[in-house]
View 1 (cartoon, rainbow, N blue to C red):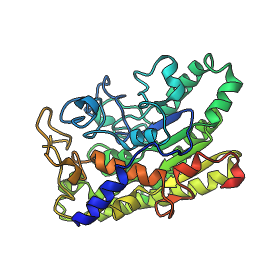
View 2 (tube, rainbow, N blue to C red):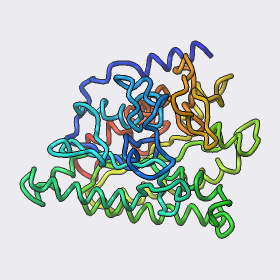
View 3 (cartoon, rainbow, N blue to C red):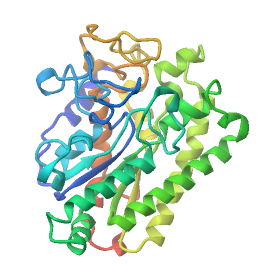
Length: 356
């Protein structure tokens, strides 16, 4: 096991600058797995702008990222060779938006109601609306609407959202009626229908190269295992999420056929997790920080010492080492084990839809 972990560490900590194709900008949509600080000033319990979050971020700053360091989208930003990191919408200003904006919000879901018991959050439709605001600002920077559209056509878009529609909606019957009203299949259909609507809105705004991340093995998070008093992963949750993942994959295949000039790919996060060396072993369901009652880190409590050996920072969110693994395999996956039809490196190299 130690040899396997060491091999993975070598793989995901190698040099980021390797001559891969660049993109002029990168736009990020998602939840707490991608949030870079959009929730910091919201009235919500879903915040991470306090230690021990950020302990391994440059300068040891708790920026609002729900992990000890960088997130997978931060790593992807480096892999596409964009200078610096992508700013959250809440603080992005001036010409900084030319390189992209991060709209992700902790606690948010595909549905507007998901996570509402936590407080305010920026669900997917609101994130897309915020993107429209960004586009209006870009028009004065790249010579008008037509030039903006051509500019955006070259950018990378990633979408990683949906976990809270299960964690903080469907499998929380105390606050939501979704489980009572819908079967697993019906609920997944509702989610993918709304998801498709927002993806098409982004397409109309100029998005042409989009990677859609599947939902991870939520039933294997320390929080859900403790909530359900489970020794092993909660199969019902993983089975429900699996239905959505299958529908998202089919959606990607459909969009590649229907939306002219656009390229989409699906990143199989559950597959990445199943193959990860962190999926087994004595630390697989341990957290790096001491937990509050809501399974986030207790503020200002010292985290674990050997953070690269832990899969989870808190009850739901992975450590930086897992984010690095996810980003690396999403960006460059030659065997196509975790991507369909292509990895992000290939996605951003396409010029015409006929190439997929």
